Image (tube, rainbow, N blue to C red; front, top):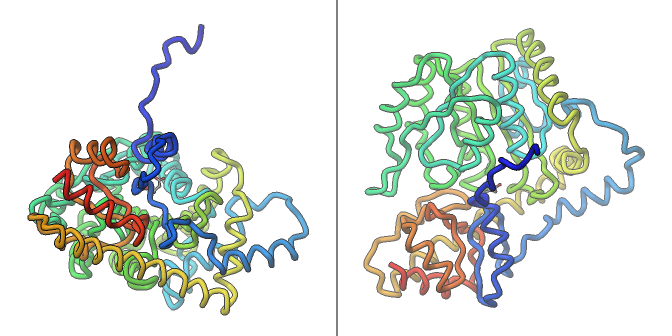
Amino acid sequence: MFFDKVQAAPADPILGLTEEFRNDPNPNKINLGVGVYKNDQGETPVLSCVKKAEKIILDSEKTKSYLSIPGTAEYGNLVRELVFGKDSEICSEGRACTAQAPGGTGALRVGGDFLAQQKIASKIWISNPTWVNHFKVFGAAGFETAQYSYYNPATHGIDFEGMKESLRQAKPGDVVLLHGCCHNPTGIDPTAEQWEELARFTASAGLLPFFDFAYQGLGNGLNEDAQGVRIFARHHREFLVSSSFSKNFGLYNERVGAITVVSADKEESDRVFSQLKIAVRSNYSNPPAHGAKIVQTVLADPALRAEWEDEVAAMRQRIKTMRSLMVQKLQALGVNQDFSFINSQNGMFSFSGLNKEQVARLKSEFGVYIVGSGRINVAGITTGNIDALCSAIAKVL
Ligand code: LMR
């Protein structure tokens, strides 16, 4: 017997919820669990720029032969320009290398594997709360994980003092995982001043920043959302950024992302790149092509890129509209609690402050699915489901 001692694992707190939702016969059920954007008709559409890029690819593609281990150089250049800005010296000095990865999760894992294989670090500090999979991804890469304070439930805001206090316990050489923007699950990001203070602190403490940058463009704009990463780039010569194009390109099931490592100089970057390729090769050999080709085609073509930027802006705007509508509706229902904090959160998620029992009642009594932490996917709210959602929330409060 080999597998008789295998224990059944609990369902994934986010993706497992989607399964449960699918199996729920309630015709009025609402899925606000997994972070997937929906338009006001409740669909997750293929972006128009993506459709056009796919046509171009279909007509021009001549081979399905392997990509190189890190994907194409052009993809890497485009990703770095998007993250650091066109005029960034990181790009012009050749101080960063990028490997295409299967989604943001794949990028985090490749980055984690690289750090672990090179014995650069063995402990990573993760925000409390965070995207639950961070623990699994970095745990699987061999990291010891620790948590730093991030959220103050009393103010529904960032616990900046607590964050600094816990990071003071970190040892030089430890990694700090930061959410580039649209913090998952809270939707609360540091201000520019706080990013600045944090970057000075982590630099002086000898910590290695690792950005999980999965929502660029969905908070306040493509450049605006990169402010944390770009501020850190002024204080740290070395750090990592994991990018995801699941949300901002709607390419969820194509699994397209990238891991970028910034080094002190070009020569160091070349050595890092050689090891990053080994982390990829020993993991999934080389990346799938289609999703990255779409991103590359759109970003490199001025007309398609402009269309993409408009489509991202429309998603961002719709989410903001749903936030304010939700606050208004809850007020109109006579809810005592002040929910205006929902308006100041960024990106897809809102940390609602609903407790476990309230979350459970939303599901069992009203067919409203949100993550157990009280995280609501605001990008799944529509004018069609918002009344039912708000009245269900009012009832469980
Ligand atoms: C989420 O947080 O809902 C998304 O990042 C999807 C996922 O893989 O969990």
